[in-house]
Image (cartoon, rainbow, N blue to C red; front, top):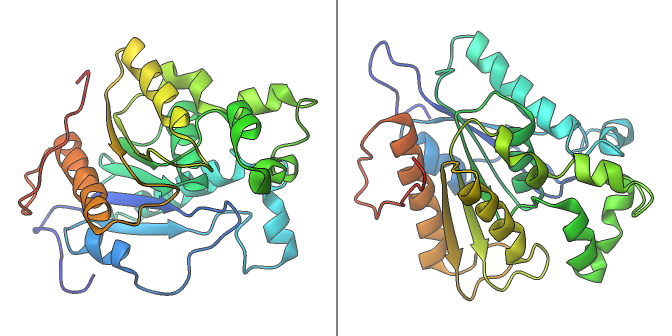
Length: 251
């Protein structure tokens, strides 16, 4: 954002955004999500990781059988490049995403040691549970992305953050719609319970009346402000916005 920059000598914190789908893509636009973070002093990178649409069939098929690997590593490599170029603060890097992007967030925090914070919006923490309870339209999607189930149940467990929560080295915040039929609330709640039992730092915001993706203005606003409050506490700054803080448990 050309209109906002960090104080002299201070590099901006980085928000790594991973899109949903997981075979969607980030376009060459400047949506309000980007504007929200950059106008508050953050750098932001939206990663079209392997498997994203718009780069040809071979690129799209990189994710086949590799969901939870290629996306995780590509997002980390994008962030690491910005850190190595001296453009962002390597000690203040957060990853955020919704739905399939939330899956990438949770797996990145539990299977890699790179980020300083993470935010999962209606993300998947347990792939086995997901294929059993999601609606019919989504139920076969994972066969290409992960493998046939239950034949490859071992891979589904390996790609499920819920089984590796105790590896997490940084705080996480989860946002969830109470009426979500695609990624039901128990995905977030089982991960929250794992954090609670293992005394890991977390925050959880549940929106009544919301489904997959938030639609009500007050809840969209609260999700952004809640994530900003969370990052302000983790990264150690006072937000200029007058916002209601979230409570980070076990911290």
